[in-house]
Image (cartoon, rainbow, N blue to C red):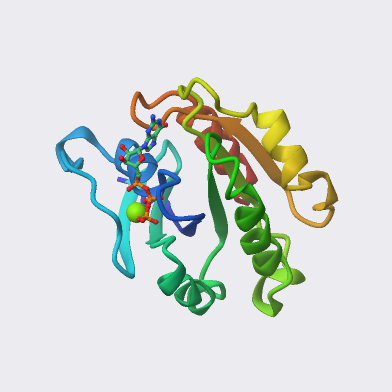
Length: 171
Ligand code: GTP
Ligand code: MG
């Protein structure tokens, strides 16, 4: 059959935001892990949509591993940035990491699409996607296509909308 176009995606965001849970949900059910543990370093995962074959660099969000992220920026053709909508205390840390990413020379001048998941929307005190986008000042991102979706990665809600958007952004 026809070979799908291959796209490298970087999955970034603080530890415990739900990156690995999201990527796991996007994989075919026979390839899904039953138990998700904190990522050490990074993990390479694959999933397909109707027209694309994604290779995901699922990075660890732990502070001690965040310096690994930048080594993969050049390869990345799209970014999935995950935020724990219930983690109000660390929203400022998530913003710092996002700003560092956006100002990196390997990212700054590229029109690379960024999909944000305001994850853990099921938590009682979760912030809305609109509120998360305000706190992260996403409206200041003018030179890259971006989109934010609220998601519940455990139930798999909100993920398809995001991936559909991402797929549309890839030429
Ligand atoms: P690192 O690999 O350490 O960077 O973390 P991560 O971003 O990959 O987070 P991971 O997917 O390991 O999820 C962390 C915890 O959050 C796990 O216990 C998940 O079950 C939980 N979790 C993930 N998504 C959701 C969600 O939408 N709602 C709720 N309630 N819990 C979630
Ligand atoms: Mg992980």
